Amino acid sequence: MKLVKITLFMVVFVVTLLLTPGNSALASGQDMPVLRLGDADDAVYTLQRELKKRGFYQSDVDGKFGSDTKGAVVEFQQMSGIKVDGIVGFETWQALRSFTGTAESSRGNYNGKLGRQLANFAQGFLGVPYAWGGAAPGGFDCSGFVYYVYSQYGISLPRVADEQYNYGRRVSLNDIQPGDLVFYSTYIPGPSHVGIYVGNGQFIHASSGANEVTLTAMSKDYYQTRFLGAFRIVR
Image (tube, rainbow, N blue to C red; front, side, top):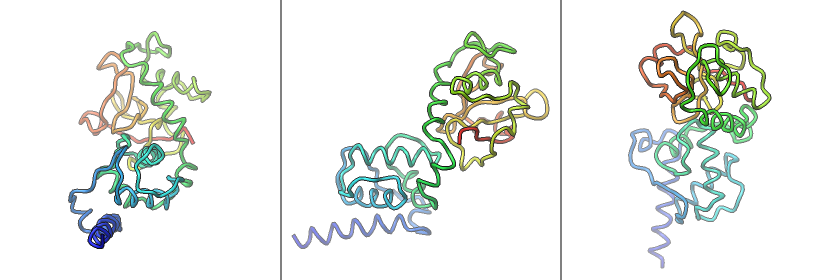
């Protein structure tokens, strides 16, 4: 029994050490414990404690990865702009380690629920044909698509991309969240193309090249080199 207690203490100590800012093991990319729904151990206890410290987790710290813990993880992932899957792997541990704000302050700057609703609603139009000047489900151009999606949630935007540009609050790529607008300089100089960030490094847009509403990785060379900025309308 004494040996078991010592072993459990060491697990908690090691995981806590990995979450400490500046820890070389984390910075060097060493393996981190992967946690998911159904797990129950001291690593989960540490995860819950760290999430609670930052205001994301409100339930008992009991070392059991239940639905409340998963919900807290999902919210943290959403607000951190990382992959949202409710699974705690290296990326989530690293984001948790470097997170300096609180859930309350993050929620104050970003209406996560509405942003995700916008992003999810927009993806319901994947495959709709591109149509120059289109701003309805029968066919969209890029700014018409953004204009239509936002209008369905009572948000009135200018109709064209160069007027939509700078309409909200500029955010960095490190802070980009679902529902934010992303702008590009494509066929003419300046903001001539716009889309909606949906998470996981992707944005949805009405593309003349694809001739339809499509999802595209922001890391794609063509768009990466033409990126002008991201703006938050939802606050």
